[in-house]
Length: 214
Image 1 (cartoon, helix red, strand yellow):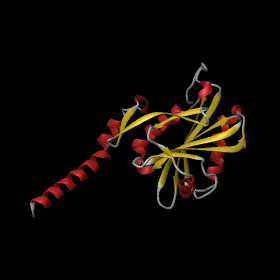
Image 2: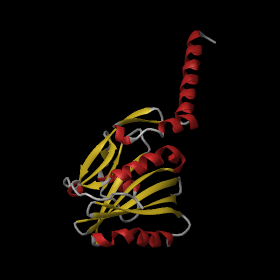
Image 3: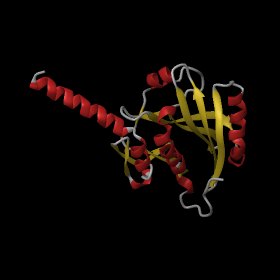
Image 4: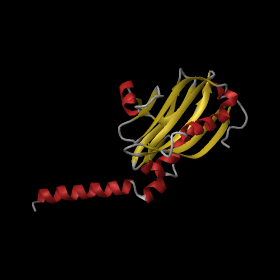
């Protein structure tokens, strides 16, 4: 074997070892001690900077990676082949999770949003064994009630972990979601839960009182 071949082999072995370390249990446990609210964290040994993104004409805010970009309409249509396509989906080229929103035409007052996840559960459960609901929560954020659920869904090609949340924006239901491939759930689930925690309505920022999940 030539010296050049040996160098290439060593480089390949080093890359393979690095890939193993990126997704190792030890790496995941260490990185899970970090918080997106620090501003910068590592995700599978890749530095990622998080910041709040203002949406819907500045009426709502949510934390996500700074380099997340909105997908074009044609890309959203290709991913979400069935009805109820989200208007907004944010992602980047190197992380395998996305954040999105569907601002519906359904009129539901804010005071009823605490039970909206129960309605969604009934709808999802009718789709059959391809969806499994794991948990439901709700919290009061200022003057807004936000409900959420965690679930696992199955497609032809993969199993997806979803965190969905529901609120009322100017009397219409706003559905948000964070989803990712189930095989990455040990690392992405804590991140997704903090993204959910960060979601807020800007008009509520000066509201006082409790703001916690129950």
